[in-house]
Image (cartoon, rainbow, N blue to C red):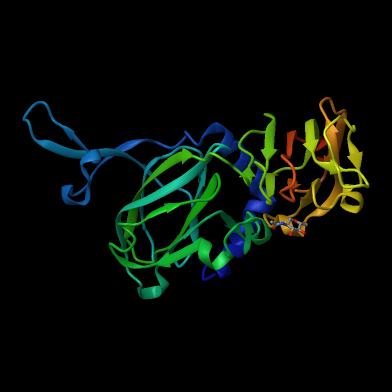
Length: 333
Ligand SMILES: *[C@@H]1O[C@H](CO)[C@@H](O)[C@H](O)[C@H]1NC(C)=O
């Protein structure tokens, strides 16, 4: 992971100052930046980027490119993006894409001119990476980390490839220490028919994790401390003879001891790596009207559905942002 060095500082910024800003930027949809039109050499673009100019019948190439302004640029909108380096700084920056829970991120470079000199490099990561920590964590992703990141530099490299993430988040990280060099990309959010790992987009809307009958572990992550409310629970339990129970059992606790194959682990961590989770509770059972709430006082909240493949598991949770009363109290003094 070549970008680790500089990423430490980015991450610190994110984790100490930025979480609420990032989440609020995410919620606002990052619409504060100015849209503007940019003239680009015509030969770089496919037909989709041309619009007929009715006046003189010529094709004029233009599109609305959103300029990447901040080093840590978070966006929940698809579209076209342009980054042009302004400095010879070797700082590592990133464009963090956040799609809807049932979407994947599809990234295409339209133009690419990132000389390899002076450590110029771009990497596309299937997930979000900060401080060397990645979401989804390695244990919950179908691919080992090496296969989830592509790094390249040069001219027009990567232009013909389509990068599609496995979940609703992806990041394009870059280090381009040559002024005037950069790239443009086109990003689409595409349907994910069976979402597994998801980064929360909303601070209040409920979300349902499902295994679709698979032997798979899926994590839902929110970048804030929270109250986790369970709205519906259907996580398979067997009785002592091994037969499947389908009637209401109520919400069972301490399932990491009694039913480790199929359970919901509620916990928190300080970074994006949810395999470093501190378990707050683990539940299982069938309960259509659970009365369950648990507070997670960590910067990152995670709800992990562990499935053996023997059951159709699902859990609906509402992960509400915890108001930090202590902090508010301190600030008003
Ligand atoms: C899911 O997680 C459990 C415990 O955390 C582990 O034992 C199991 O192997 C995992 N399953 C998959 C498919 O990774």
